[in-house]
Structure formats: structure tokens, C-alpha cells
Length: 261
Image (cartoon, rainbow, N blue to C red; front, side):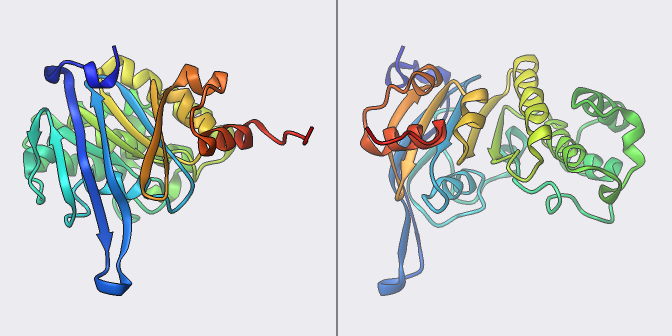
């Protein structure tokens, strides 16, 4: 079944003609130019492209961090207002790229995880915090640590736990491993893969790293200069089955240097 054939009831996120412009007049820049795609419930969908192509802008717009845009954004087949409400943030959470900057340096892990629970009115906070710390491979003892006492990988596990503790339906992943050592990247990717399977969460991930995105995502869209030019399955990417010249160049670059014939 192709994305366009996916039953409406199974669509959880959709963009229709999304256009984001920064600045005005002669100084304006079109960051996202008429982007449309659909993500099915339970799917892991990836968006890949070079830095500055607009992929993170799309993620931030969906998250409600960019409020000025044209086109439509739909969640569970209902159009989202430009100013997101509390219920949206209960169902859609974001994991940021930088685990060093996304956690408050003066707050213990317990406080970081308790805050979203309090905002959204969840009961049994201690039990939920212990459970989510176990789920991300840390354990209850980490409740009493500060960010500076944690490694980069441990901080990103806390950031993932913070997103998951209120049981969202969708995780928005903004290059969640790019700030980590290569040895830690695989651990975080495998953790995200197992969490998706166990919790039936939908993922929307952006990255510039083809290996990372094909490891986690079922379906991948290729973006350049503000537009999506091609959608592929992970199997298509691994087999090098690309339609567009830009995508073929991207695949060849990711595979390594190919000498001229």
C-alpha cells in the first residue's frame, strides 16, 4: 500500500502544501516550499537532506515552534491551529539534537521528568519516573543526578525519557544522535527502535546521515532547497534505487568515494 492509499483513519500526521518564509520583502527567504507528505500511525518516517535544506524547519513547524506558515498541518485528520494547544503537546513530543543544551543544568533528572507529568496532570509521578528510566536503560538511581554528572549518551536517554513519560503518540526526532560519539550513536538508535516497537509510537525523524535514518525509518523522503523531491523505502535506499539525480548523488556520497570510470 502506497502512502497515498493509506486509509484516512490510519494517518496521524500530514502536511499539505507547507510553505515557511523567513523575513519580508527583498530580504525574505523561503525555507520550505510547498511540502506535502503523510505519516501513518505507528510508522517511522525519515526526512533527509543537507544542512539548510529546510528539514529541521519542517520539524519545528509541526512542533509549534514556528507559527508563521502557509498550507495545512493535520494531526489525526484534524487541522492544527497555528498556536498549538495543551492536548497537542501531550500527544506529540520532541527530542532535540543537543543533549547538553536540552536539559536544565540546575535541575535533577527527577525534576526534569516530574515537570511534564505535573503540567499534564498525571498521577503516581514517582512510579512513572522509575518506569521510564528503566525503559531507557538508566534505572531509578539516576533520578538524583544532575546533567553535568551524566555522559552525552545518558543525557540523551534522559531527554528521550522526558518525551516518553507522558505517553505521547508521536515523537519528533531532530538528529537525535548527531551530537554523540559514534560508539554511542548505535546504542541510542537501537533504544529508539525497541521503544517504538514496545510502545507503538510513531516517529518523524530528520537527519543528514543516511545510515542513521535507514536504520530507524521505514520510509524516507529526500529534501533539497526547501522541497521534497523523492520518497523511498529503506530497502530502496539500501539497494540504491533512486529516481532523481540528486538522490543518486546523495546515495553515492554516503556509500563512499566511487572512482571515475
